[in-house]
Amino acid sequence: MRKPTLIILLFCALIVSTASARPQYSALFGQSCFLCHANPTGNGIRELYGSQFFGPQYLPVKPVSFATIEKIKPKLSETVTIGADLRTIWLATNTQSDSVEAGLSDAFSTNTGTTAQMEGNIYLQIRPTEQFMLYISRGVSDATGRMEVYGLANLKGFKGWAKGGQFQENYGIRFADHTSYVRTGLLNGFDGGAFSSPAPPYYGVGLESGTRIGGFDISGSYTAGQSNIPMDRDQQKRWVARTYGQRRLPFANKWVISAGGSWMHSPGKAIDPETSFPFAAGKTTSWGAFGGLAFEGIHDKMGTGNGASNFGWLATSLLIEYDRKNWVTPETWTPVPFEVTSAFATAQLEIMAYQGIWVLGAYDWLDNAETSSVAGEAERTTIGVTSYVLPWVEVSLKHRLYSSEDIPNQFVPGGVIKQTRNKKQIEAQLHLFF
Image 1 (cartoon, rainbow, N blue to C red):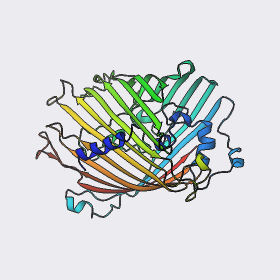
Image 2 (cartoon, one colour):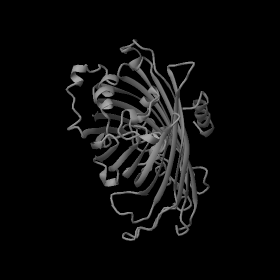
Image 3 (tube, rainbow, N blue to C red):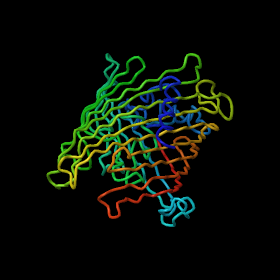
């Protein structure tokens, strides 16, 4: 699939009207992520509604009884609540090949059927009052600066909130699949070239505020980029803004539409004075649109129940995001400064085939070809199934197919950076949460 087709898909998704955490649930219910999560932008610790009711009642193949729910105590006291997300992956891929024809037929490599801990976060929430929260999230990814620690005040008079500390910036759709191209680009050379570095969201230290006006969530933040080094030695700064709205269709009450947009600007950063790393990043600007269409489903069919209070059979969520990123390297860049413009996109479709069992499909796309010195296009297609076999236990199986173009480059011997042509990948995930 090429860019014109992708743009048509995005346009169709938005024109039917206008449209982590699992954002498809927000889309299905037409509710803000704030309904289930303590963080108004979603992700992280779940409020009591999310951990004690939504999770055990709406998600699993067999909903938990209210007698069992009464025994669940995420609150350690009147002011302290805990939570967790643990995610383990098993991954296998076929061997690397320069041949388009051989790529799909290559056998799975014996050294790639391995496991890794993708996520291991423990959450702690302290609420001295209903209007103020202290929040800490620590996990296996702390070394990359992904720890969150902040204070949040609810500004009820303004239907808003303010946050200060280290947090994940609010940009686009926070897909649960963190490898979505709009979340990570093609990080670590996933077939898109040297300049397919991540689009937002990033982690930063600073201030964020937001409000809900007329059914739209609006937020903005100013941060310094953060890593495992606590001081902002490279002087990187970022401004991020996002708006998002949802509406249930008046002529089809089981359908919810949503739409929004994001913008990020970073004026650049200096060379780290302690390490003297020579490749300082230049000015970066990202912007994009996202939207979705969701169908509540047919109730009391294929294991579903509880009338209008539960997902119905064939409950469907389609979410699409399209972003562009412009990166201008510093004048000191060697051997020559240049400008890169990339386009990223992700589309995810999920359909509930039975209570607690979802089939899914996804398409990711990246194009660096708009820059003469750095060309390259890559795409990924995903099909799979996920199931909440037990409350707070999710298992998923996915098959991914990557395809990409070689990248012309005048600085590489032979003038071409070889990319993986057709690579297939199978992954299984176990997600434990509370």
